[in-house]
Every structure is written in structure tokens, then in C-alpha cells.
Length: 514
Ligand code: NDP
Image (cartoon, rainbow, N blue to C red; front, side, top):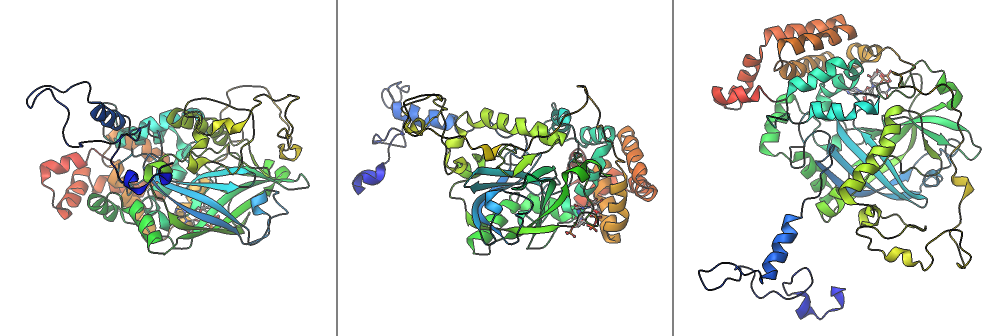
């Protein structure tokens, strides 16, 4: 609208209604020393807008950074999925990527030890496809009923308003399947050197369906072309003190310099019938599918080549939802995924309202339906003059597309609140990771990082946690036990405090945080 105005008008300072402002420094008062007049509507407009700047923050993944880019198909996967954006080698689809920490509130450092969000929104011809993953291949729990408890245990203590390692390890010790993600989080991959140097994983299991109706269970891996680079515990803590937003700035500035980060996308696929019989429960998000059994199949490449113009408009208002799946990609019975199909949309309705899909960063290429009205509807109800289906007056009604139907799947059994029905050993994969994947230096760092945090906990919580480490592996348990007894928290924190020049009374407080 304002582009049509003569230039002298567009340069004026105005209210949010576009009315020129005479003075932006002083309120309107009754006399030089008198009270403010209610008539000062410019002041009221300015303050009311300011008071409403904050929208509810995400309960998880509040602190993040985003960038625009594209996805390019590099390999033929048409025998596995009919998803249109994956049909031709060389095909490019625009996307938006948001990376984030999980636990910290908005404004917290993005260098703290955490699992990181790795969320992608592909703007496809079949609507927006959201792949809402993390930087680990597994998650901490597999039943969505536990989600609020997990986040309450990880986030600020209700009285101290500070992270409390006691609540965190208390939860982990009682949910032993968390040990896989916990172990990965306490390697140095829990403190990556910014978002460019980490991999992304779907973690959850989805289904791919091809044109012939054959279906495959699928997990995604995005491998960084920048290479994995991690901070040590001490480097992360020190850098977070100097530049708390290191990861956000690193991503933003590398793209601004023209150094575009990229990731190669791979999938692991299991034919549906085979997956149901697989040793590892394909619906259990605390398990991986070993590469020796299901190798990585290359699909394409993601490149981030454009920074955002405004953080709030794009990075904060982007609304991801794992239920945004395009034909050819379907949910599986992965229980955590099933819970996420509801909870993300619910969060976006709470944060951004019923028309959040109309915000430019979320807007798909085409929407055609009979939905209407609602808070912040800014698109004229799709210019429709008829607002109901089954009408006889529209010349061209939106047509349903039978090819978009999901593949029917069978259900068996009685309803009930089951613990994970096809429960696998929760420790074997962690044991393999600890003994065979980690190098001896990485194991040293793992033990040191765990002791640094667990060392701050009460003896009872340390004992509870030690039982879980011993369940994984004798060496793992005994090294943590030895680390805890050798490096009492006061000496560990004392050493750290000395290195960073903190006085001993202040170092007491470090011992109370994660
Ligand atoms: P592989 O030897 O084929 O793969 C090991 C994987 O571990 C690689 O993808 C490697 O990533 C990754 N890795 C190495 N260090 C870490 C770390 N500190 N944190 C997270 N991932 C790391 O082994 P398998 O597939 O047989 O799996 C063995 C174990 O490796 C699993 O039990 C699991 O704990 C872990 N793992 C398995 C993954 C999978 O999808 N199969 C994915 C990630 C971990 P990189 O490519 O950077 O070397």
C-alpha cells in the first residue's frame, strides 16, 4: 500500500494507522509539570504495541535460528515414494530450515548442552511438507504421555527458576530408555560448534508409499557437508559466556558471506511387512536401525543460501507440524510421532492462532477449501462467494483427489494403556555405541561431561543413575562411578571456576546449574 504514496509521505514517522506523529520524544501533559493526558493517543498506541510484542513462546525449541534454501533431488527414489517433490533428479524445492536448542527459553544461549531441533519446511506443489527432526538419531522417551514430565524435569526449577541437574537426572534414572539419547547428549555432540556442524535425523519412523501402493518404513538422516565439529564442555561454557548466540550468528553470517551450508539427505528403508518382524521395534524412537542392516540410501541435498530478513516474522512465526505430510509420505504407529501429530498443531494454535498458515513464512503455494474467518484472517477468505461444500452454484468447485488417500493399514488388539508392546533391550544399542563407535578420547570426554553434571546431584540421584550406566556396560558404570568419587563437584567446579577466574563463593552457584 505505502509504495503507491508519494515519497515525502513514506518517510514520515506515523502511528500504526499511518497517521503522522508530531513528536516522538515527549508525552502530552497538562502543563510543563502536569500529568499525562489520556488524549495522548500516539503515546498509548506506541506503548500498547510494545506491551503486546511477545507472543507465547514455544514450550520447547524456543531459542533458534533459521534460513531459506532449497532441496535438490540427487538420486532416484521413485521406486520407494510417490512424493512429487522427490520425483525427478535435479528437481529443486524451496525450503525453510529452523535449528534450535530444545530446553532453553527464548534468549538463552544456543551453546548449552542439549539435543537440538532440526526442522525443515518444504514448500511443495502438494502443500507444505514438514520434517521436524533433531540432531540425534534417537529421543529420550517413546510415549508422548511422558512429554510434559520430561520438559518439566529439564526446564527451570519451579522455585529457583534455574536448571536443576537433580530433576533432570531424577527423570532419566526412572526412564531407562532415555540412556541412548542421554549418552549421545553427553558426548561432545551435545555441544556442536554451531548449527552448521551437526547432522539432522527424523528420529521418528514414517512411511513412504510408492505409485504401486507398496510401503516402506523410513528414517531420515541429513549429514552435514561442513563436517562434524564440537566444542568440549569447557569451550562451550566459556564461549556461551562470551557469545551466547554463537550458533545463530554463525549460521546467519556464513550465509551472508556466501558460504552456504549444505547437508546430504539419506534414508533408511524397510519394506513394511519386514519391518513389523524386525528385531528392533520400528515404532520405538529410542532405537536406531544399524547401518549394517539397513544402509543409508542417498536422496538429495539441502542448501541454505538466504538469511531471513526479520527474526520474529520468519524464525519465530514459522509453525512446524509433523502432521504436514504430502502424498507418498505417511505417519507410522511410532507412538511419539502419533502424539506429535496432535501436539505441534495445538501449540501453533495457541501461539499464533487459527490462521497461522496465512503468515507468509507458513503460507503454502495453494489453498482451496471452505474454511473461513477466525482471528487474524488476512486473506479475504480466499475470495470465495460460496462458503460451503455440496453447493450447486459454484462453476468450478475444488475437487477432492483420491490419489492423496493414505494407504489403508490394519489394526489389531484390544484398547489399553500398554507399556511399549514390542519392548527391545534398551541397553544393547547404547553398549555398541559406547564400546564400538566412540573412540577412547570420545569416551573420556563422555565420562568427564557426565561427571561434570551428575556430580552436582544428590548422592541418591547419583546412585539411581549409576544403576542405569551399569546396566549398559560394566566399564561405563565403573568409570562414571570413579569419576564421581575422584572429582567431587566442588573440585570439578573449583577447577573450572579457577580457569575462568571466578571467586570461590561464586563458584558455589555454578554447582547448582546443569
Ligand atoms: P555405524 O558404525 O554404521 O554408525 C555409527 C554412527 O554413529 C555414524 O552414523 C556416526 O556418525 C555416529 N556417531 C559417531 N559418534 C557419534 C556421537 N558422538 N553421537 C551420535 N552419533 C555418533 O554403526 P551402527 O549403525 O551399527 O550403529 C551403532 C551405534 O551407533 C548405534 O547403536 C547408535 O548408538 C549409534 N548411531 C547409529 C545411527 C544409525 O542410524 N544407525 C546414527 C547415529 C548413531 P558420523 O556419520 O558422523 O560418523
